[in-house]
Amino acid sequence: MMRGNREMRRMLDKMGLDMKTMDNVEEVIIKTETKELYLIKPQVIEMKGKDSTIFQVIASDIEEKQREVPAFKEEDVILVMQQASVSREKAIQALTESKGDMAQAILSLAT
Image (cartoon, rainbow, N blue to C red):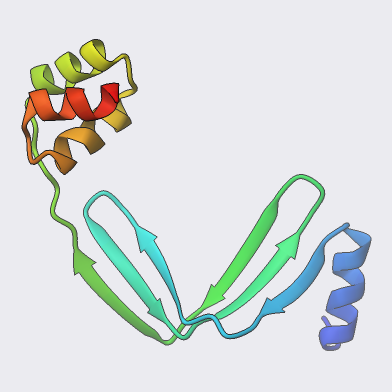
């Protein structure tokens, strides 16, 4: 069993992790394909290692909102990808910003 914060810090130091509390965090937003989670006034702890960083987030007030998922035809996405020489994600983003207008999406990616 751990005997408090001091022993935990010693163990993390042995593992090469530097732990610090992030102060004054207003919110953390987690986005998935279908929803957004807003963690209001969370406690956030950052643990830095040699090759990675781990964030521990603790929140008691969570708001969940559904995201609008635009639906584009697969052919439209492929055409924008080919014409603008971009990835699928960039093509979908451009189509979303242009509200489905393929010509505008291609032009915005070309400039």
